[in-house]
Length: 152
Image (cartoon, rainbow, N blue to C red; front, side, top):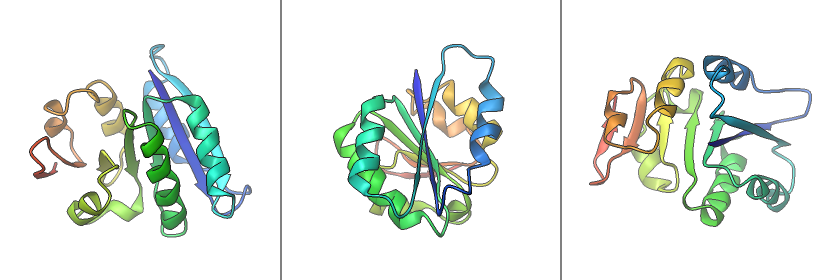
């Protein structure tokens, strides 16, 4: 399974601390192939999308911050149109509250993590293809098959 991390920052002087934390939880599992696309919020969206698309990931993951939110949503909405079967998961401080409105406005986002997602992400990876099991993952917010908001 290919997991692609979108590392979108305000400049190249910054990098995501979430990726090493998430990777550490599953580093001993050889079935996970990790890739990263690093970019800044000022880069051409089309160029970033093209780079992500070339990886053909099964899972797209990113941290959403106040400073990268708008650029990230432009990028992931385009990527999801090109790779509709890729599962898009987001986390970060933008999802600390009620996430139903966000998920309804952005139907291309499969789910978001509230709070510390490191341990929950590792659990989610074991069942990412079966939404019925998602209800057991603490901190995961998503719309189920019937369009009902689930907030674990």
